[in-house]
Image 1 (tube, protein in one colour):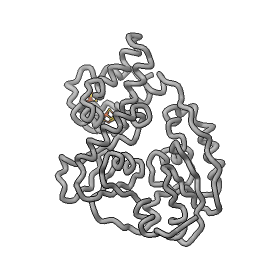
Image 2 (cartoon, protein in one colour):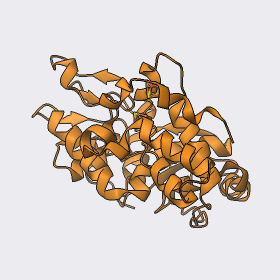
Image 3 (cartoon, protein in one colour):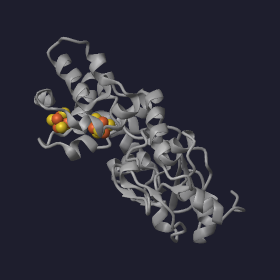
Image 4 (cartoon, rainbow, N blue to C red):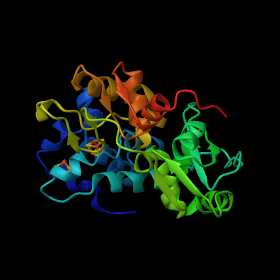
Length: 280
Ligand code: SF4
Ligand code: SF4
């Protein structure tokens, strides 16, 4: 494992004010430097490995600390390396069989059934790949163990193209090297209001940038291993959004922000709105 975990110990740690988890939780242990320190202590045998794994799982992989670090410390990657070292692979569901015909495959991951609406919008059949665990994205933390799962996904999607607007699912599709396309790329643009973009990119016309949220907590291990803290991050982000509805190109962000009380739409909502009568 990398020896760089002590770098943050010698730093004024100004990045703590940029970390969405540290800010939303108010916990010292949730600052980037303290997550790194926990890994260092476990490396030296001073705390149990499971405590380091839990600390490293406080990260959403938003990259804010790394983008502003004068020393170029790659905190998200280092914490991912630590989680893989100190924890066991999560158990994930087998890839389900595809339902229906159609070269395009709607990856439906949150209970919304949108394949019929996409078929109606495009005028061609669309099949469905249902998943309740974002195609088992938790397994990507242990890339070396993920190969059989990714091979199964390759086999199921052979000869077809997946459609998704969920970055958690897209991460797995990319890891499996299967053809995929974003849902919003298939549809005509139908939104001209403010947009919530993941990971520090902002598109909030007329909204003060210093009040625009950069992370909703829906990504990375935080959401699966510390769901209560992920909800705190989502609530903090939702409180910074404009009062009018906001679009989020990412379905996982939409779901987290909606659960926190924000008015957020994603490409699936917009599709279902334009094709309200499409049925299976
Ligand atoms: S990531 Fe960079 S700025 Fe943040 S504590 Fe570590 S060394 Fe300091
Ligand atoms: S990547 Fe984001 S969530 Fe993770 S430690 Fe850095 S600022 Fe915090």
